[in-house]
Length: 494
Image 1 (cartoon, rainbow, N blue to C red):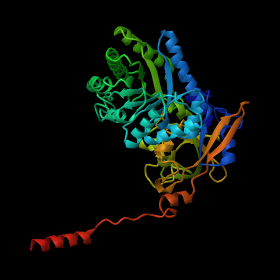
Image 2 (cartoon, rainbow, N blue to C red):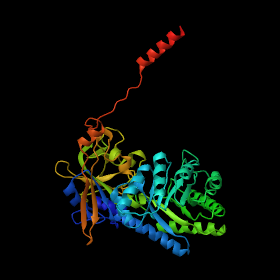
Image 3 (spheres, rainbow, N blue to C red):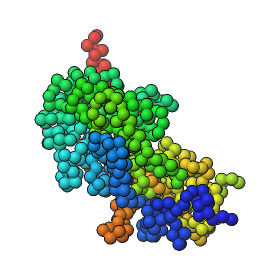
Image 4 (cartoon, rainbow, N blue to C red):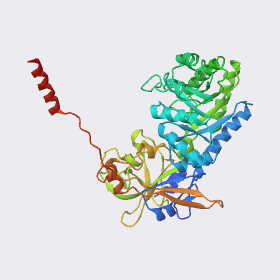
Protein backbone atom coordinates (compact mmCIF):
# COMPACT_ATOMS: atom_id res chain seq x y z
CA UNK A 1 0.00 0.00 0.00
CA UNK A 2 1.34 3.44 -0.92
CA UNK A 3 2.53 5.81 1.75
CA UNK A 4 1.05 9.25 2.38
CA UNK A 5 4.20 10.93 1.06
CA UNK A 6 3.80 8.98 -2.20
CA UNK A 7 0.26 10.33 -2.55
CA UNK A 8 1.44 13.91 -2.11
CA UNK A 9 4.43 13.59 -4.44
CA UNK A 10 2.34 12.08 -7.23
CA UNK A 11 -0.40 14.73 -6.82
CA UNK A 12 1.70 17.89 -6.39
CA UNK A 13 5.12 19.28 -7.08
CA UNK A 14 6.49 18.52 -3.64
CA UNK A 15 8.45 19.59 -1.63
CA UNK A 16 7.72 23.28 -2.13
CA UNK A 17 9.59 26.38 -1.01
CA UNK A 18 7.34 26.46 2.05
CA UNK A 19 6.62 22.82 2.85
CA UNK A 20 8.86 19.78 3.10
CA UNK A 21 9.40 16.60 5.10
CA UNK A 22 12.48 15.81 7.20
CA UNK A 23 14.27 12.50 7.62
CA UNK A 24 11.89 11.56 10.44
CA UNK A 25 8.92 11.84 8.05
CA UNK A 26 7.51 14.92 9.79
CA UNK A 27 6.36 18.15 8.18
CA UNK A 28 8.44 21.32 7.98
CA UNK A 29 6.63 24.67 7.60
CA UNK A 30 9.01 27.37 6.33
CA UNK A 31 11.83 25.15 7.63
CA UNK A 32 10.25 25.16 11.08
CA UNK A 33 10.16 21.62 12.58
CA UNK A 34 6.53 21.47 13.70
CA UNK A 35 6.93 18.37 15.86
CA UNK A 36 9.48 20.21 18.01
CA UNK A 37 6.95 22.98 18.66
CA UNK A 38 4.22 20.44 19.39
CA UNK A 39 6.47 18.67 21.90
CA UNK A 40 7.18 21.98 23.60
CA UNK A 41 3.66 23.46 23.68
CA UNK A 42 1.14 20.68 22.99
CA UNK A 43 -2.10 21.08 21.05
CA UNK A 44 -4.43 22.62 19.98
CA UNK A 45 -2.02 25.29 18.91
CA UNK A 46 -2.03 28.41 16.76
CA UNK A 47 1.25 29.45 15.17
CA UNK A 48 2.24 32.77 13.60
CA UNK A 49 5.41 32.64 11.52
CA UNK A 50 6.32 36.33 11.51
CA UNK A 51 8.99 36.42 8.76
CA UNK A 52 6.27 35.51 6.26
CA UNK A 53 4.62 38.90 6.86
CA UNK A 54 7.77 40.81 5.92
CA UNK A 55 8.35 38.52 2.95
CA UNK A 56 4.93 39.28 1.48
CA UNK A 57 5.20 43.03 2.03
CA UNK A 58 8.55 43.16 0.27
CA UNK A 59 7.29 40.90 -2.51
CA UNK A 60 4.29 43.14 -3.25
CA UNK A 61 6.51 46.22 -3.32
CA UNK A 62 8.79 44.44 -5.78
CA UNK A 63 5.83 43.50 -8.01
CA UNK A 64 4.74 47.13 -8.31
CA UNK A 65 8.30 48.38 -8.67
CA UNK A 66 8.90 45.96 -11.54
CA UNK A 67 5.64 46.88 -13.27
CA UNK A 68 6.18 50.63 -12.92
CA UNK A 69 9.70 50.31 -14.31
CA UNK A 70 8.47 48.17 -17.21
CA UNK A 71 5.91 50.77 -18.31
CA UNK A 72 7.86 53.87 -17.21
CA UNK A 73 5.02 54.72 -14.84
CA UNK A 74 5.53 58.15 -13.27
CA UNK A 75 3.39 57.72 -10.14
CA UNK A 76 4.47 56.26 -6.81
CA UNK A 77 3.30 53.15 -4.94
CA UNK A 78 2.30 53.02 -1.25
CA UNK A 79 1.64 49.78 0.61
CA UNK A 80 -0.96 50.01 3.39
CA UNK A 81 -1.75 47.16 5.75
CA UNK A 82 -5.47 46.48 6.28
CA UNK A 83 -5.67 46.17 10.07
CA UNK A 84 -8.99 44.31 10.16
CA UNK A 85 -7.28 41.21 8.73
CA UNK A 86 -5.48 40.86 12.06
CA UNK A 87 -5.29 43.57 14.70
CA UNK A 88 -2.65 41.82 16.81
CA UNK A 89 0.22 44.05 17.81
CA UNK A 90 2.84 41.52 16.73
CA UNK A 91 1.35 41.50 13.22
CA UNK A 92 1.15 45.27 12.78
CA UNK A 93 4.59 45.90 14.30
CA UNK A 94 6.14 43.26 12.03
CA UNK A 95 4.53 44.87 8.98
CA UNK A 96 5.64 48.34 10.07
CA UNK A 97 9.27 47.17 10.07
CA UNK A 98 8.86 46.97 6.28
CA UNK A 99 7.73 50.63 6.16
CA UNK A 100 4.07 50.02 5.47
CA UNK A 101 1.25 52.46 6.12
CA UNK A 102 -2.13 51.61 7.66
CA UNK A 103 -5.80 51.32 6.72
CA UNK A 104 -8.47 51.37 9.43
CA UNK A 105 -12.10 50.31 9.73
CA UNK A 106 -13.46 51.40 13.11
CA UNK A 107 -13.16 53.76 16.06
CA UNK A 108 -11.06 51.29 18.04
CA UNK A 109 -8.52 51.29 15.20
CA UNK A 110 -7.83 54.92 16.10
CA UNK A 111 -6.82 53.76 19.60
CA UNK A 112 -4.34 51.41 17.96
CA UNK A 113 -2.99 54.29 15.85
CA UNK A 114 -2.53 56.37 19.01
CA UNK A 115 -0.74 53.52 20.79
CA UNK A 116 1.63 52.94 17.86
CA UNK A 117 2.37 56.67 17.72
CA UNK A 118 3.12 56.85 21.43
CA UNK A 119 5.58 53.97 21.03
CA UNK A 120 7.14 55.74 18.01
CA UNK A 121 6.23 52.90 15.66
CA UNK A 122 4.56 55.46 13.36
CA UNK A 123 4.67 59.25 13.04
CA UNK A 124 2.43 62.09 11.87
CA UNK A 125 3.45 61.48 8.26
CA UNK A 126 2.30 57.85 8.24
CA UNK A 127 -0.65 57.38 5.93
CA UNK A 128 -3.78 56.36 7.82
CA UNK A 129 -6.51 55.53 5.33
CA UNK A 130 -9.82 55.51 7.22
CA UNK A 131 -12.43 53.32 5.57
CA UNK A 132 -15.85 52.09 6.59
CA UNK A 133 -19.20 53.58 7.56
CA UNK A 134 -18.28 55.87 10.43
CA UNK A 135 -20.24 56.19 13.64
CA UNK A 136 -19.72 59.21 15.96
CA UNK A 137 -16.70 57.83 17.89
CA UNK A 138 -14.89 56.98 14.66
CA UNK A 139 -15.58 60.42 13.21
CA UNK A 140 -14.41 62.02 16.44
CA UNK A 141 -11.17 60.00 16.40
CA UNK A 142 -10.40 60.91 12.80
CA UNK A 143 -10.94 64.62 13.40
CA UNK A 144 -8.75 64.43 16.50
CA UNK A 145 -5.94 62.98 14.37
CA UNK A 146 -6.38 65.85 11.92
CA UNK A 147 -6.23 68.39 14.73
CA UNK A 148 -3.16 66.75 16.25
CA UNK A 149 -1.13 67.08 13.07
CA UNK A 150 -1.53 63.70 11.37
CA UNK A 151 -1.17 65.23 7.94
CA UNK A 152 -1.74 61.99 6.05
CA UNK A 153 -4.84 60.81 7.87
CA UNK A 154 -7.25 60.46 4.93
CA UNK A 155 -10.88 59.61 5.68
CA UNK A 156 -12.50 57.85 2.73
CA UNK A 157 -16.01 59.26 2.45
CA UNK A 158 -18.50 56.41 2.43
CA UNK A 159 -21.69 58.46 2.17
CA UNK A 160 -22.83 61.98 1.29
CA UNK A 161 -23.22 63.16 4.90
CA UNK A 162 -19.89 62.06 6.34
CA UNK A 163 -18.00 65.15 5.21
CA UNK A 164 -20.27 67.42 7.28
CA UNK A 165 -18.58 66.25 10.48
CA UNK A 166 -15.07 67.07 9.22
CA UNK A 167 -16.19 70.46 7.92
CA UNK A 168 -17.33 71.35 11.44
CA UNK A 169 -14.70 69.61 13.56
CA UNK A 170 -11.43 69.14 11.65
CA UNK A 171 -9.49 72.37 12.21
CA UNK A 172 -6.19 71.47 10.53
CA UNK A 173 -4.80 73.84 7.92
CA UNK A 174 -5.22 71.13 5.27
CA UNK A 175 -7.57 68.15 5.45
CA UNK A 176 -7.11 65.54 2.74
CA UNK A 177 -10.10 63.44 1.78
CA UNK A 178 -10.90 60.42 -0.34
CA UNK A 179 -14.15 59.10 -1.78
CA UNK A 180 -15.02 55.43 -2.03
CA UNK A 181 -16.92 54.68 -5.23
CA UNK A 182 -19.71 52.13 -5.01
CA UNK A 183 -18.79 49.45 -7.54
CA UNK A 184 -21.15 46.95 -9.14
CA UNK A 185 -21.03 43.51 -7.58
CA UNK A 186 -20.33 40.28 -9.44
CA UNK A 187 -23.22 39.09 -11.65
CA UNK A 188 -23.99 36.19 -9.32
CA UNK A 189 -24.03 38.34 -6.16
CA UNK A 190 -27.19 38.99 -4.15
CA UNK A 191 -27.05 42.74 -4.89
CA UNK A 192 -26.30 44.73 -8.00
CA UNK A 193 -24.31 47.57 -6.43
CA UNK A 194 -22.13 47.55 -3.31
CA UNK A 195 -23.69 49.05 -0.18
CA UNK A 196 -20.30 50.66 0.49
CA UNK A 197 -19.25 53.97 -0.99
CA UNK A 198 -20.86 56.77 -3.00
CA UNK A 199 -22.50 56.01 -6.31
CA UNK A 200 -20.83 57.25 -9.47
CA UNK A 201 -23.52 59.78 -10.30
CA UNK A 202 -23.10 61.58 -6.94
CA UNK A 203 -19.30 61.99 -6.94
CA UNK A 204 -19.08 65.20 -8.94
CA UNK A 205 -21.87 66.91 -7.01
CA UNK A 206 -20.33 65.92 -3.67
CA UNK A 207 -17.04 67.48 -4.71
CA UNK A 208 -18.50 70.66 -6.21
CA UNK A 209 -20.95 71.40 -3.37
CA UNK A 210 -19.05 70.39 -0.23
CA UNK A 211 -15.32 70.05 -0.93
CA UNK A 212 -14.39 72.60 -3.59
CA UNK A 213 -15.93 75.64 -1.75
CA UNK A 214 -13.76 74.94 1.34
CA UNK A 215 -10.11 75.76 0.60
CA UNK A 216 -8.80 73.79 3.59
CA UNK A 217 -10.31 70.56 2.26
CA UNK A 218 -8.69 68.69 -0.62
CA UNK A 219 -10.02 65.72 -2.55
CA UNK A 220 -6.81 63.70 -2.94
CA UNK A 221 -7.94 60.13 -3.54
CA UNK A 222 -10.59 57.94 -5.15
CA UNK A 223 -11.03 54.50 -3.65
CA UNK A 224 -11.84 51.32 -5.59
CA UNK A 225 -12.51 47.85 -4.22
CA UNK A 226 -14.48 44.79 -5.27
CA UNK A 227 -15.21 41.81 -3.04
CA UNK A 228 -14.02 39.27 -5.59
CA UNK A 229 -10.45 40.50 -5.25
CA UNK A 230 -7.85 41.05 -7.94
CA UNK A 231 -8.66 38.48 -10.62
CA UNK A 232 -7.87 38.27 -14.30
CA UNK A 233 -11.47 38.19 -15.51
CA UNK A 234 -13.84 40.44 -17.43
CA UNK A 235 -15.62 41.60 -14.27
CA UNK A 236 -12.47 42.94 -12.62
CA UNK A 237 -11.19 44.72 -15.72
CA UNK A 238 -14.53 46.29 -16.56
CA UNK A 239 -14.92 47.70 -13.04
CA UNK A 240 -11.33 48.97 -12.90
CA UNK A 241 -11.74 50.60 -16.32
CA UNK A 242 -14.99 52.29 -15.28
CA UNK A 243 -13.31 53.53 -12.11
CA UNK A 244 -10.31 54.93 -13.99
CA UNK A 245 -12.47 56.83 -16.46
CA UNK A 246 -14.21 58.41 -13.47
CA UNK A 247 -10.84 59.31 -11.99
CA UNK A 248 -9.84 61.01 -15.23
CA UNK A 249 -13.14 62.90 -15.34
CA UNK A 250 -12.67 64.13 -11.76
CA UNK A 251 -8.99 64.98 -12.27
CA UNK A 252 -9.96 67.51 -14.94
CA UNK A 253 -12.14 69.47 -12.49
CA UNK A 254 -10.17 68.76 -9.30
CA UNK A 255 -6.45 69.59 -9.57
CA UNK A 256 -5.74 68.30 -6.04
CA UNK A 257 -6.80 64.75 -6.96
CA UNK A 258 -3.63 62.74 -7.54
CA UNK A 259 -4.08 59.27 -5.99
CA UNK A 260 -6.14 56.10 -6.28
CA UNK A 261 -6.56 53.29 -3.77
CA UNK A 262 -7.26 49.98 -5.51
CA UNK A 263 -7.97 48.21 -2.23
CA UNK A 264 -6.83 44.73 -1.36
CA UNK A 265 -7.59 41.40 -2.93
CA UNK A 266 -4.30 39.75 -3.83
CA UNK A 267 -5.06 36.07 -3.24
CA UNK A 268 -3.18 33.73 -0.93
CA UNK A 269 -2.42 30.08 -1.47
CA UNK A 270 -5.22 27.82 -0.23
CA UNK A 271 -3.99 24.67 -1.97
CA UNK A 272 -0.68 23.22 -3.11
CA UNK A 273 -2.23 23.58 -6.57
CA UNK A 274 -1.84 27.34 -7.07
CA UNK A 275 -1.07 29.06 -10.37
CA UNK A 276 -1.74 32.76 -9.80
CA UNK A 277 0.76 34.91 -11.71
CA UNK A 278 1.22 37.89 -9.40
CA UNK A 279 3.65 39.80 -11.60
CA UNK A 280 1.58 39.44 -14.77
CA UNK A 281 -1.52 40.67 -12.92
CA UNK A 282 0.19 43.74 -11.46
CA UNK A 283 1.79 44.48 -14.83
CA UNK A 284 -1.62 44.50 -16.46
CA UNK A 285 -3.11 46.75 -13.76
CA UNK A 286 -0.33 49.32 -14.25
CA UNK A 287 -0.60 49.11 -18.03
CA UNK A 288 -4.38 49.62 -17.97
CA UNK A 289 -4.25 52.56 -15.57
CA UNK A 290 -1.58 54.26 -17.65
CA UNK A 291 -3.35 53.61 -20.97
CA UNK A 292 -6.64 55.12 -19.71
CA UNK A 293 -4.88 58.18 -18.28
CA UNK A 294 -2.95 58.73 -21.50
CA UNK A 295 -6.16 58.37 -23.51
CA UNK A 296 -7.75 61.10 -21.37
CA UNK A 297 -4.65 63.34 -21.26
CA UNK A 298 -4.31 63.32 -17.47
CA UNK A 299 -1.23 62.45 -15.37
CA UNK A 300 -1.17 58.95 -13.93
CA UNK A 301 -2.15 58.74 -10.24
CA UNK A 302 -0.12 57.60 -7.28
CA UNK A 303 -1.29 54.10 -6.35
CA UNK A 304 -2.19 52.86 -2.87
CA UNK A 305 -3.13 49.31 -1.93
CA UNK A 306 -4.41 47.95 1.36
CA UNK A 307 -3.49 44.29 1.36
CA UNK A 308 -4.68 42.41 4.44
CA UNK A 309 -5.02 38.68 3.82
CA UNK A 310 -2.04 38.82 1.50
CA UNK A 311 0.05 40.42 4.25
CA UNK A 312 -0.74 38.09 7.11
CA UNK A 313 -2.70 35.09 5.81
CA UNK A 314 0.18 32.78 4.91
CA UNK A 315 1.92 33.39 8.25
CA UNK A 316 -0.69 31.41 10.20
CA UNK A 317 -1.17 27.75 11.04
CA UNK A 318 -3.39 25.76 13.40
CA UNK A 319 -2.23 22.38 14.73
CA UNK A 320 -4.52 19.70 16.15
CA UNK A 321 -4.13 16.21 17.56
CA UNK A 322 -6.41 13.40 16.43
CA UNK A 323 -7.89 12.16 19.70
CA UNK A 324 -10.24 9.47 18.43
CA UNK A 325 -11.20 7.42 15.38
CA UNK A 326 -14.89 6.64 14.82
CA UNK A 327 -16.16 4.29 12.12
CA UNK A 328 -19.78 5.42 11.82
CA UNK A 329 -20.74 3.21 8.85
CA UNK A 330 -19.10 1.12 6.16
CA UNK A 331 -17.82 4.17 4.28
CA UNK A 332 -17.35 7.03 6.76
CA UNK A 333 -14.37 7.11 9.07
CA UNK A 334 -14.05 10.08 11.39
CA UNK A 335 -10.83 11.45 12.83
CA UNK A 336 -11.88 13.53 15.85
CA UNK A 337 -9.62 16.51 16.67
CA UNK A 338 -8.93 18.25 19.98
CA UNK A 339 -10.39 21.55 18.75
CA UNK A 340 -13.24 23.00 16.72
CA UNK A 341 -13.51 24.28 13.16
CA UNK A 342 -16.51 26.46 13.96
CA UNK A 343 -14.75 28.32 16.76
CA UNK A 344 -11.10 28.26 15.66
CA UNK A 345 -11.37 28.29 11.84
CA UNK A 346 -14.77 29.97 11.36
CA UNK A 347 -14.21 30.72 7.66
CA UNK A 348 -14.11 26.98 6.97
CA UNK A 349 -17.62 26.74 8.40
CA UNK A 350 -19.12 30.11 7.46
CA UNK A 351 -18.06 30.41 3.81
CA UNK A 352 -16.65 26.97 3.08
CA UNK A 353 -13.08 28.28 2.95
CA UNK A 354 -10.46 25.62 2.25
CA UNK A 355 -6.96 25.70 3.65
CA UNK A 356 -3.83 23.72 2.97
CA UNK A 357 -4.29 20.70 5.26
CA UNK A 358 -1.57 18.11 5.85
CA UNK A 359 -0.52 15.68 8.56
CA UNK A 360 2.41 16.79 10.67
CA UNK A 361 3.78 13.27 11.24
CA UNK A 362 3.51 9.68 9.92
CA UNK A 363 4.22 10.65 6.31
CA UNK A 364 5.71 7.19 5.72
CA UNK A 365 2.48 5.42 6.73
CA UNK A 366 -0.30 4.22 4.39
CA UNK A 367 -3.23 6.58 3.94
CA UNK A 368 -7.01 6.38 4.02
CA UNK A 369 -10.01 8.55 3.24
CA UNK A 370 -11.32 10.32 6.35
CA UNK A 371 -13.62 13.03 7.65
CA UNK A 372 -12.40 15.44 10.32
CA UNK A 373 -14.75 16.17 13.22
CA UNK A 374 -14.58 19.02 15.75
CA UNK A 375 -15.42 19.01 19.44
CA UNK A 376 -18.68 20.95 19.41
CA UNK A 377 -22.07 19.28 19.26
CA UNK A 378 -22.95 21.21 16.09
CA UNK A 379 -23.51 19.04 13.02
CA UNK A 380 -21.58 21.56 10.89
CA UNK A 381 -18.35 21.22 12.88
CA UNK A 382 -16.50 19.12 10.31
CA UNK A 383 -14.00 19.34 7.45
CA UNK A 384 -14.08 16.70 4.73
CA UNK A 385 -12.87 18.10 1.40
CA UNK A 386 -9.86 19.98 0.06
CA UNK A 387 -9.65 22.77 -2.48
CA UNK A 388 -8.25 20.42 -5.12
CA UNK A 389 -10.28 17.32 -4.27
CA UNK A 390 -13.64 16.14 -2.96
CA UNK A 391 -11.84 13.63 -0.74
CA UNK A 392 -9.63 14.04 2.31
CA UNK A 393 -6.78 11.61 3.00
CA UNK A 394 -4.63 11.17 6.10
CA UNK A 395 -2.19 8.54 7.34
CA UNK A 396 -3.43 5.30 8.90
CA UNK A 397 -2.36 5.03 12.53
CA UNK A 398 -3.12 3.05 15.66
CA UNK A 399 -5.05 5.29 18.05
CA UNK A 400 -3.96 3.18 21.03
CA UNK A 401 -0.22 3.33 20.43
CA UNK A 402 0.48 6.23 18.05
CA UNK A 403 -0.13 9.96 17.93
CA UNK A 404 -1.36 11.74 14.84
CA UNK A 405 -1.13 15.50 14.41
CA UNK A 406 -2.59 17.54 11.55
CA UNK A 407 -2.05 21.12 10.46
CA UNK A 408 -4.11 23.75 8.67
CA UNK A 409 -1.94 26.35 6.99
CA UNK A 410 -2.35 29.94 5.75
CA UNK A 411 -4.94 30.68 8.42
CA UNK A 412 -3.43 33.97 9.61
CA UNK A 413 -6.12 36.39 8.40
CA UNK A 414 -9.51 37.05 10.02
CA UNK A 415 -9.98 33.78 11.96
CA UNK A 416 -9.28 35.22 15.42
CA UNK A 417 -11.52 38.24 14.95
CA UNK A 418 -14.34 36.27 13.32
CA UNK A 419 -14.15 33.65 16.05
CA UNK A 420 -14.18 36.21 18.86
CA UNK A 421 -10.63 35.74 20.14
CA UNK A 422 -10.61 35.21 23.88
CA UNK A 423 -14.38 35.51 24.08
CA UNK A 424 -17.29 33.07 24.26
CA UNK A 425 -17.21 30.24 21.77
CA UNK A 426 -19.76 27.64 20.73
CA UNK A 427 -19.99 24.95 23.45
CA UNK A 428 -17.47 27.07 25.42
CA UNK A 429 -14.55 25.63 23.44
CA UNK A 430 -11.54 27.66 24.65
CA UNK A 431 -9.28 29.68 22.38
CA UNK A 432 -6.09 27.62 21.88
CA UNK A 433 -2.64 28.71 22.92
CA UNK A 434 -0.86 30.93 20.43
CA UNK A 435 2.86 30.73 19.67
CA UNK A 436 4.93 33.27 17.71
CA UNK A 437 7.75 31.86 15.59
CA UNK A 438 10.51 34.19 14.44
CA UNK A 439 14.13 34.24 13.34
CA UNK A 440 16.90 35.90 15.35
CA UNK A 441 19.75 37.92 13.88
CA UNK A 442 21.69 34.73 13.12
CA UNK A 443 18.77 33.05 11.38
CA UNK A 444 17.96 30.73 14.29
CA UNK A 445 14.32 29.82 14.91
CA UNK A 446 12.83 31.31 18.07
CA UNK A 447 9.44 30.69 19.68
CA UNK A 448 7.44 32.77 22.14
CA UNK A 449 4.17 31.96 23.86
CA UNK A 450 1.90 34.86 23.02
CA UNK A 451 -1.20 33.54 24.81
CA UNK A 452 -1.98 30.48 26.85
CA UNK A 453 -5.10 28.45 26.21
CA UNK A 454 -8.16 30.34 27.40
CA UNK A 455 -9.13 29.31 30.91
CA UNK A 456 -12.44 28.84 32.68
CA UNK A 457 -12.10 31.99 34.77
CA UNK A 458 -12.00 34.30 31.76
CA UNK A 459 -15.16 32.73 30.35
CA UNK A 460 -16.95 32.80 33.68
CA UNK A 461 -16.13 36.48 34.06
CA UNK A 462 -17.41 37.32 30.57
CA UNK A 463 -20.60 35.41 31.28
CA UNK A 464 -21.17 37.30 34.54
CA UNK A 465 -20.57 34.47 36.99
CA UNK A 466 -17.38 36.01 38.40
CA UNK A 467 -17.86 39.68 37.67
CA UNK A 468 -15.92 41.96 40.00
CA UNK A 469 -17.78 45.08 38.98
CA UNK A 470 -20.62 46.42 41.07
CA UNK A 471 -23.64 46.53 38.80
CA UNK A 472 -25.84 49.60 38.63
CA UNK A 473 -29.55 48.96 38.44
CA UNK A 474 -32.16 51.34 37.06
CA UNK A 475 -35.90 51.06 37.54
CA UNK A 476 -38.17 51.55 34.54
CA UNK A 477 -41.89 51.94 35.30
CA UNK A 478 -43.54 48.61 34.61
CA UNK A 479 -47.08 47.27 34.66
CA UNK A 480 -47.79 48.54 38.16
CA UNK A 481 -46.95 52.15 37.30
CA UNK A 482 -48.85 51.86 34.03
CA UNK A 483 -51.97 50.55 35.78
CA UNK A 484 -51.76 53.32 38.35
CA UNK A 485 -51.49 55.97 35.62
CA UNK A 486 -54.43 54.43 33.76
CA UNK A 487 -56.57 54.43 36.92
CA UNK A 488 -55.74 58.09 37.62
CA UNK A 489 -56.72 59.02 34.06
CA UNK A 490 -60.01 57.16 34.35
CA UNK A 491 -60.82 58.92 37.67
CA UNK A 492 -60.09 62.28 36.09
CA UNK A 493 -62.49 61.51 33.26
CA UNK A 494 -65.23 60.58 35.72
